[in-house]
Image (cartoon, rainbow, N blue to C red; front, side, top):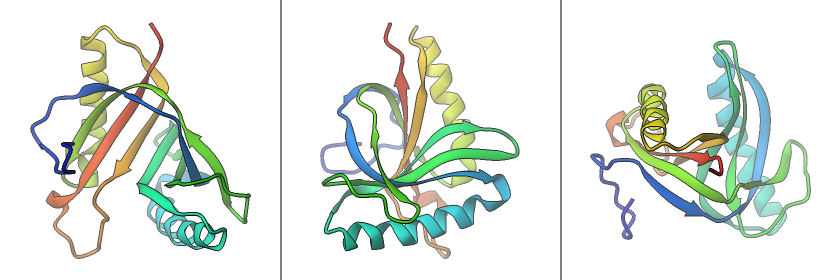
Length: 163
């Protein structure tokens, strides 16, 4: 992503240093068939709780993946916020980790994200680096039911293990 926020869809992955980010999340282990409902309900409750606690959302929505299988995903969905929240209902405080991250921007529909993650994983190996356990997507385009999926921009971030 460039300084002006635009995305170059032909960009190669890069390694960037990221700082720890305070977040508000909903955590779940969700059957694959229930992912859409989980995302939708989480992204409805999060802004409400964040606002009720007087905090401010300071970044786009994201999902951090703890583990993925063919049957279910263990994940956090949330927003970067300006301060740590008190637990309220299913919303809890968390943090995105600091460190060296391999990053690429996927341009297009969510159905292409699996291939984009595979491409990023292969690129990490080609660089002689080791992928760590934490990886997350940042959704720079808010999806809408009637939008053209080719307009979606999703940033993939994979924390690298120290050498």
